[in-house]
Length: 161
Image (cartoon, rainbow, N blue to C red):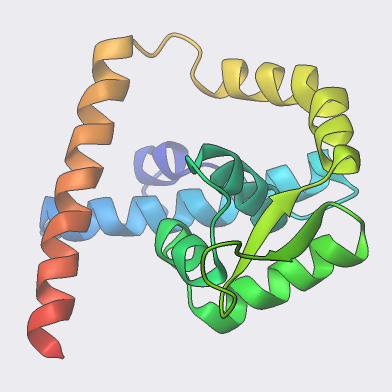
């Protein structure tokens, strides 16, 4: 049962909950459901591993673990574990940075690119179905809102340090 059905069938009571709290709850529940769905669809790798691949691919230059951790919004240790699993599958490799020998950069392999190409249609189909009948302007508004929330959250985290 999805959240809308649960509210409609009065399985949960959202009356009196500030909309900002409810939104965070919806985002958390969505992330759990999306990860479960993506893990089932991908089979060979987890959603978190695939998301790491997407983020590596989005970087203008091959990232370090620290840089990728910032993009993923996850700890260095968690990202390292994800990357070690991807490395064992032959999807990523680490190479010493040419300009700074202390750094290692993460590169996607040909096997990874082949995997992505093979699964592109499945990914496009799933995304198309998820965003069916949602206007582009609503998607853009959601992106803008989430980026603003993230910025505010980062400021809050910095003030706590």
